[in-house]
Length: 174
Image (tube, rainbow, N blue to C red; front, side, top):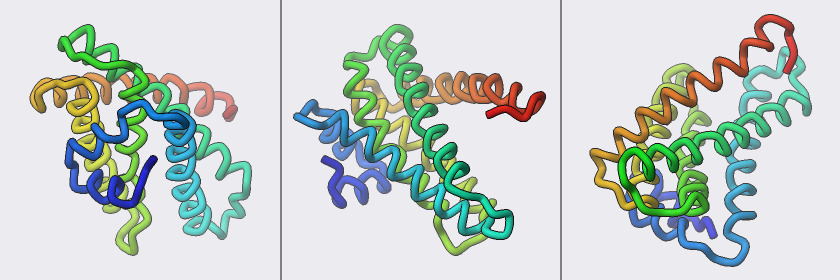
């Protein structure tokens, strides 16, 4: 389902790529989950390689991949709810899940031979822009409305992420 042409066009933020993958096909949902896991798995391996002196192992990589999958399962319903109920978009949650899976492609830019902080900032901004384009394509919203949905969903995800990190900061529990 996610062909190299889709990945390249997703990096270029072309709405047609997101529209094409959002269409329901047999196995589309499984390939979306697999795709998101592959992206976060690659990022986890990269992080382990960068931090190889600390001895980060399989548990760290697995936690990274699971956290990424959890973040994806949270951001798509937030985008869908705000887009459909707040901005009068039309589309199903499944379409948005498939489109936002493709929006994870820019995160792979973190695996660049540049300054790590710079690569993370560029990839993060590009990821948010990709989520906006995915919302535009999947829900049929104007880019302006999709940007509003994206800002609201990013704020909600930031709040949720920080709430989940409170037990980690206090008790050291993952």
